[in-house]
Amino acid sequence: MKQTAFAAAAIIAWLCLAPTSHAATLDEVKEIVELYYYGEKPANISKAKTVNEIIAQLDEYSIYMTPTEYKEYLNQYASAGPSTQVASVNAPIMNKTNVQSHMMYGNIGYLKIKTFSAHLLEDVNTHWARLKSQGAEKLILDLRYNGGGYVESAEQLLGFFPKVKDAYKLKTRMGVESAKAIPAKNKFPADTYVLVNRFSASASEIVAVSVKDQEAAVVVGEGTKGKGSVQSLFELENGGALKLTTGHYTGPKGTPVQHKGVQPTIKMAPGTEMTGIHKRLITAKLAEKKYKAVAGPTDVPRQKVFNVQFTQPMNFGSEKSFDKMELIKFGSVSIPTTKKITNTKTMSIQPAKPMQLGAEYMLIVHPGVKSTGGRSVKQGTYTPFTVQKTQTK
Image (cartoon, rainbow, N blue to C red; front, top):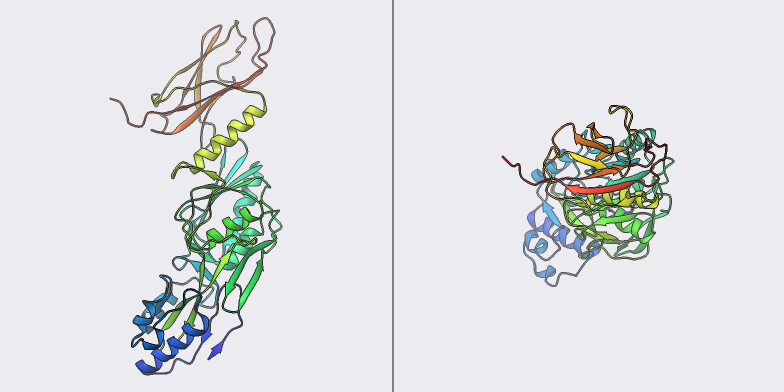
């Protein structure tokens, strides 16, 4: 058996692709399983008469591929080739929109990664540099629905976190070894938030458990999938391949992932993670600046008019240039509005376009508005509210 050197999360065994008998393939699979499989040892492997009988005794991620299936598998693989280390539920698929980003209100950047592709390092560098140039001071990193990908890409992503040094620990039949994060020059903020859900798996969980173990970021959402195993690809003499679980990874401090998942530091209901953490960050920032919280309405119309009343006659100035009131959408930015002076004590604000059904917004009134007597409002206010879920006729 010809085999490459053992690396962080995979063993690739290369064998001559010569014709072989069914019995020879069966014996070959038995030998590989006995030498490398990591998990509960199959009880009747020696009595198995077919490869499928062996596979049935292994975990759900260990599979046998016929020569035709293996060829299709390689065709679907990314350009890095079959020897690349992979920790994913499915083989990673390359696409041009794998990484997406935008700015949120409050100088908060948002960066979503769909899969740990072979080009993740370059993509993240590009997007994070762009967000910083737009003024991002904090970051929300979204790994929800991310089923994993290349282990090296996870190690590279962890290198963006200032407090991360170790990536993970890997337990195999050969023992336990530690993997280091690959340092990046373009660091994330110290207070980065990582979003996960029950569909975040494998390489995503490597990142989540690593930052949690090292207190390098705040994990937000729900418990992850719990796929803490890594698979190695063994090419067989018949031209097929055996993808076999050869190890389980843990966090740098030994926190298990397999069948347990990574539990978030801040729990949030599915679907509310991004808007929920954005709301939390904005509210905390306003409270720190001594803004006063004012209870907001629910189920407001999509084109609600908000009338803000002051206790004294005010010098509002021009309606178009008045910048002491704004509407923001959680998960997004300050939205376009129209303002109107109703009377000397009242200014109204209304969204320029209908607001999104069921979405959460906030009305912010900043300090600094002056009365006709020259006195300035010293305390700002903020009012969160929700838009009606269905359109009224």
